Image (cartoon, rainbow, N blue to C red; front, side, top):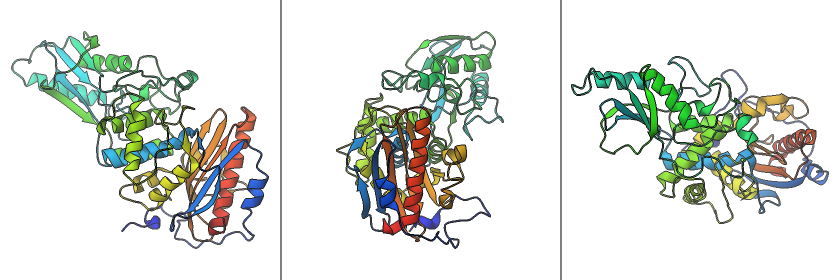
Length: 425
């Protein structure tokens, strides 16, 4: 049986949760921290992972916007529904004319237009040039197609339906590089620069992918329209994403919105809920209900948490984190993807957990969440007293601008207090 401490997020040679640790002297000051709270409306829920007992709850049953802590739900649903070893396929099939091929998107946003051997922001991503080589080789070995150059590329991106943009998202999220249009075919998350996590995204994710692939097939290949590839069409080549377990780790550590949305859509499709944004609610909640969690109070508008239409109680997130911390089924994958305070991912940015809260560095692993008027953190603390505490902290209705940074600092400070208090909460 897997235990909470079987997995370590720490690099070799650094302190791990099993190393001796002496807590700072002093009493639990959670009441003082809550009593002096001034960073918007506080939602707080904390539970002992061993017993599942709620240790503290403030507005924990009130549904609220989640920011990127929504990705915990999406990640858990993806692992539970798709399986950690599953990969996402992009394939090419022969078209109805001998000089035509069809590129079929399978929902993999990590597919890269960079040459094989060059890494994008997605480690282990498949490459278009590999797919093109397979296609040209397969055609050269087919007596009917050999000697006939590819002149036309058609595209099947019909796996996802409905609008490509969630109406609750600000347009600036695309131009700033936070998220792309969500389509079943894209390359590099539709980034202008495949090597930068935050790079502007375009207006035609499918078009960018098709243009890049056509150039690899030949200098005179034209891009045709969208088609539905026949199920019995001759397969000319395929490439696969990294396993879902690696995709989940990446989307959590780096808070990748496009990857979260793609996986949420694939979960909905796998569960028969549909293939558009509206299907995400039924798909993800269905997967979480199968874990025995109460989902009646959840309302999910997307898979990334960018929409303010998402509504989830903090208590639900913490209950999910209890299961993640216990490494139930394959949920250890989700634990492995959590950023470590002061060490990795979003929790190592901008000096987080490096000054007043440095005692909690390396002892908290969590997913952050930020909207224009919200800051949050949900995760697992290996507490100073040796207990393991799952917690969710959201500051809602926070002022914009510099004050939002203050809210994040307040959330971090409260998380550090959860670490210091442990079972004394």
